[in-house]
Image (cartoon, rainbow, N blue to C red; front, side, top):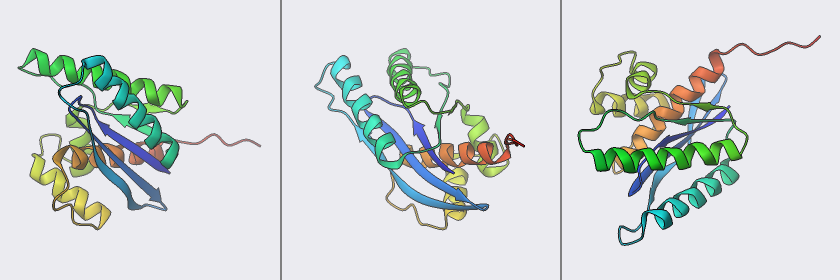
Length: 164
């Protein structure tokens, strides 16, 4: 099972790709998609859409997780995140993939077993589960890996249809 996790944002959109094979997790890819601030919103969203489509084509995930928008105090930030989230959902839907939309607390629960874990606890568990160091990896990429891990776990827990 290959899962792509997306931590949406217009300026920086985190992504993480993991594989879950026989209960073992493996890091495939992680990073941030950045768009130039001097571009129009429309151009930035277009660039984000193209980059996400490229990731989907390159890694061919079986499932995508896009973090659900959490309340933001800054309305402009919330709008930008919401727009980026919409682009991510569109790219996954175009690819015909199942989509999970976890809240931040659901991601923390899936990775740490505690829905109120802090960022450092989530990052430490992501490192432990993947068996890698994430030193120097941007926070949004680490968050996206946590989303991908939760997405992979959710897929593994769902019953599969038996034909016969």
